[in-house]
Structure formats: structure tokens, C-alpha cells
Length: 81
Ligand SMILES: [Zn+2]
Image (cartoon, rainbow, N blue to C red; front, side, top):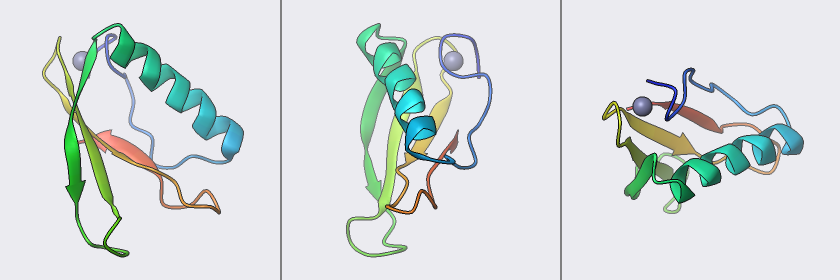
């Protein structure tokens, strides 16, 4: 974890606004090449499309796992890999 990626994990996203704000922050860091998208890892937990998007911080080499929230804003998270 560092200031170039994120300094805290997100255990959940509380609503659409919260998710959009986070998604925007993440997009900015990807565009600025602070974070690099690695791949999508299917974990088959809740069906074949379920899994985590993996990102690599180019500064501290932290691997991050993003799980997108479902329609009721449950199940989403952004945690260290
Ligand atoms: Zn970092």
C-alpha cells in the first residue's frame, strides 16, 4: 500500500455513489499508470462470471483485488492480494 495506489482496503461499497467515486479514483490511477491492470481471475464463487480483477501498483508492487458489487451493493470489495 502506498499513496500512488490506495492507503486503505475497501471491505464493501455502501451505495452507487460510493462505488462510482471509488471507480473514478481507480480509473484515474490507471490512466496515470500508477496502477496496472493484470487480469480477471474467475473464482467461480457465485457463478461463472464471478471473480476478481487484479491490479499491480507500479510503485510499491502491491497486488490489489477488486470485486465489483452486485445490484444490491453487496459483495464488492477492494483488498490486498
Ligand atoms: Zn502502491
